[in-house]
View 1: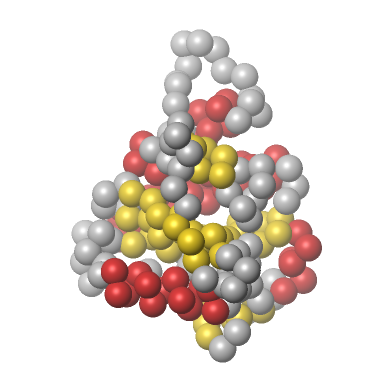
View 2 (view 1 turned 120 degrees about the horizontal axis):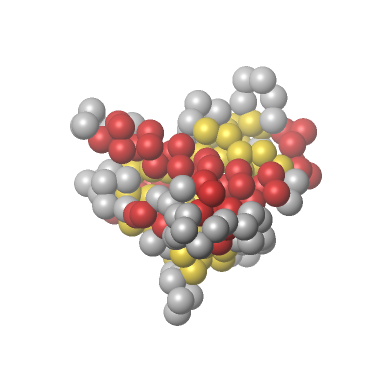
Length: 176
């Protein structure tokens, strides 16, 4: 998601890279599909979308071509600045819902806040709050659950893997 504030670009790039790691750990561990970053165009419905992060499940990998993704990914993420208006955010949500993206995240890089949306049966998005423990459960990647405060804290790759039980770390090593 473009912004005219160039000081935001580094925060956006850092968060985008961390989100790709977050999703890739689970997607690769369970061989679920592919995670792609900014630059991959999504051509779905009547529009072209340019999310910052995309998850394409294995069963939809045939829609990934060299020039674009032709169809709806399971999950799309836009990294926004907190100054983006609610009207602009709602317009983005409508575009992703019209493209039939099951799960859509809007994440504020400058505030570390995440807004998770999941499509209902009529392709309208519902805001999905974390559970009482602060955990988000993905609808697009069933194996993906994580503390929402990770978006602000951005723990290391090894910490993510340890939290999910994919690796063991010594007690002296980094904790989430």
